[in-house]
View 1: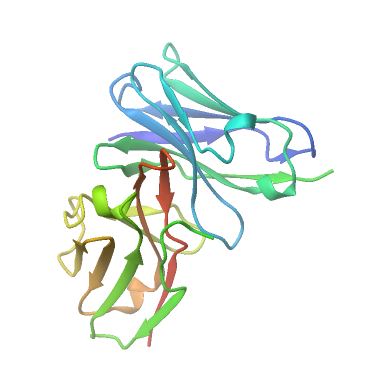
View 2: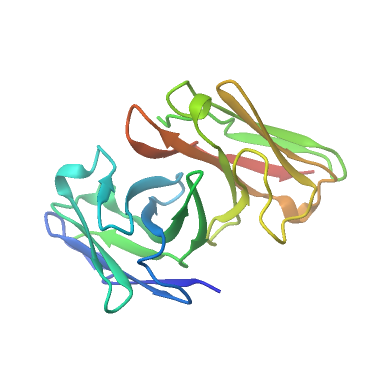
Length: 117
Length: 110
């Protein structure tokens, strides 16, 4: 059974960089694709980006200029860095496995990141 | 404004059937598989339907999916109070080169 767990600071100051890590257990991250998705309070889902097993990354065009997704295969982890954050980046951030047919089947429990001074 | 359009809310009586629509374009639904997710308040989204009409293991056959042209539909029969949740559609948009989701539909079971 694949399990994902997000970790990182729950509070980030405006203009700083949001950094989160997703740790995957029960499967290798080199076998599948993996996404970051976020959900602002009381709002819908927004895809942030994904990477494939070759290490190539694909970003939401609206976030691309501020976004970096990286992989640490030795720890079976992948990370998200979003720079120059504002209050609009306040959201629950999820990591998820991304399969063919553009579906996300396994999700982390999500972590709330609040952008505030 | 979401790329995929869903009704913000729907309601139906317990035991009845409801269909939730998801409207898109040839850039997304028209040329790609659609998935549906169920999300209860404060919990993680759960995959309900993938590849337009397939159910993951453990999802009851009360849930069904279909696609026609640039629209997709989630059907739920024999509604139960436990089906009260938010439902999201999702797919790939080739023009945006991005995964896109609908704005979500809040289902109330009367």
